[in-house]
Image (cartoon, rainbow, N blue to C red):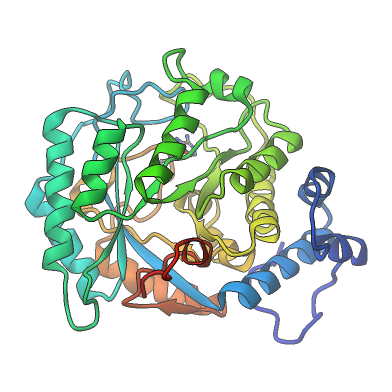
Length: 382
Ligand code: 5AD
């Protein structure tokens, strides 16, 4: 399917009138979401994609925001049944970056004009690690201040479920966005892919705590999980809307051989990609002004997956910034791209990719979602 290259003339690709009309409906119901997610023929998918792109450009403009991704540690206290760095995977060479490593990634982000970074890690609540992250956040905000970025880099954290006190400490240190994926909003499916000690309710509770503390909150799901239905995916989108979520990061499920879900039957690659692109588009149609990431997992299954993600309504990309030496040790799923590259390689590759999708990179900007800026009185940052 060639839905990546920008169309030069309006309507140059066939588009189903039925799906175009449905996609343009002002209030999409659950049944509408399910129908849109069921688009299969090329003209049906194109109709949903084109409307999602139209909504994105009209609501949020054509900017693509970058968040340099630093994978601070692959040590993890959780045993999620799908994840390559789950604690019982003995094949993983565990690492934790030093404060200096994290700061040097941040300086590189700032030099390249990336307005924001994401610090991601396995889920760890040990004091040593939280102290490290707190100090890193504090120092990054001070050390990346420049004329072009008077407030320093924006910082998003993605380090799992923590106590309210921890969330508060890290917010006070200067982080202002937090990503915590719900993975699936069907509690039965959630239970099937997590060990008994991880509960759906406590994950939802954390999302609420994050909002209370003041973060802009991101969540997301995996798409194409064994046993997942279109109804589940439609409910995921309704959940994002009910929780007033600001940012969404979601991608296809990719079975990892070293995990219990590694050889359960799931939809084939083409089907998972179809669903993942449609989820981006339909989420854009329903939520309109949120930030949606074109995630790395899309590129793991399709060499131009992230560009396609942009064309289906995503407006954020997370370029890899982790030191090259540790990239291969942070494999949540197989086929992770860019493990042999460095941050500079990723920069020039991304510029090309974003332009190819007909969009512009927003440099030196935190790139908060319009949704968050509307909610916060007094507006947001650059
Ligand atoms: N396939 C796809 N995504 C995965 N993640 C973890 N393991 C996998 C996998 N096997 C995603 C989860 C997690 C995020 C950091 O990576 O959604 O929240």
